[in-house]
Picture 1 (tube, rainbow, N blue to C red):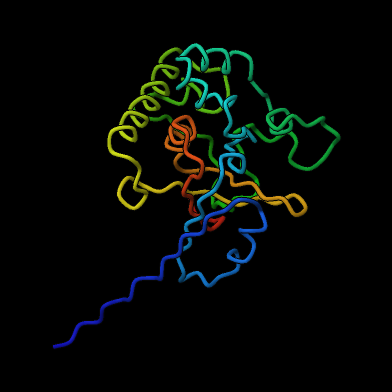
Picture 2: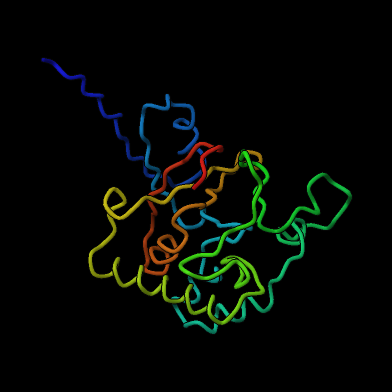
Length: 206
């Protein structure tokens, strides 16, 4: 008796230096698995925090938990416009809560859940206010991931990939990291010139 074996999608690695290197691959058939190796300058997290030395996660790996405490204490947006540093002008969506990602299609718009045993009241990873327990949790996750990568290297097929979405402004692209924020910070702080990322469908809950 014969059994049907589904063929695995062809896998492609693309090393990216600028937005123009990405464009030819954005419209490939979904069956082709493309891993984009992106420079840190093209990476950001919600809400528009670039993965440079000033990203709170990268800075925390450099200098310790005090960096997180400063970030959460000084960055406490009350709505989506404030989260992205926009002046409110009566535009649609300005007053949405700061955790919203409006371009992601979801059946339900629910606030972030608690993580790793902490209730939602302890705060969100990418803006304040947060509790001391939340700061300790985020620092522990960063240190654990960084130590693992330093010891074993990083293999996205084995350790979990970094996923998100490409966003465009004119002819410029950034990659919005939705899954793998701590891994990305560890790779950037560790000196990686390119970070392997996969683009997920906008309706996909990461």
